[in-house]
Image (tube, rainbow, N blue to C red; front, side, top):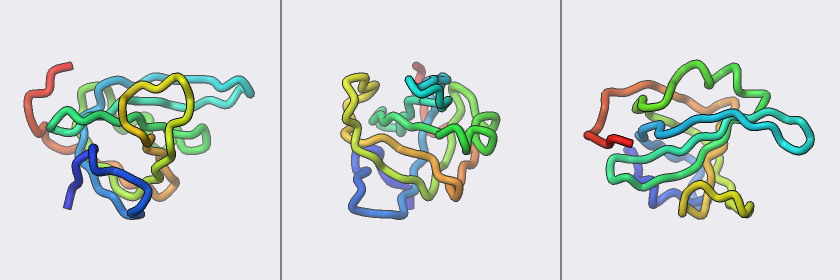
Length: 112
């Protein structure tokens, strides 16, 4: 069963969500590590930030683009502590080597 983004928290380990990719960009940390960051929204427009670490970029980055709807399964949730928060959600999705990502049909008319 797919969950609402607003319900996501680390108390559960096996989440499944259906979200629209609103924005995706690449970043480089102060230590020179690359990552892909994004903002995702469910059909109720609840938003959450997500991150693909450098070692996993090749697995996921080319599979979806801004505007795509995707189902995401098996990911980690980390507390957002930085002052560069991109959403109001307390947590950030971190893609794992075992994360499953599939494109799906659009769920609604979210136009961002």
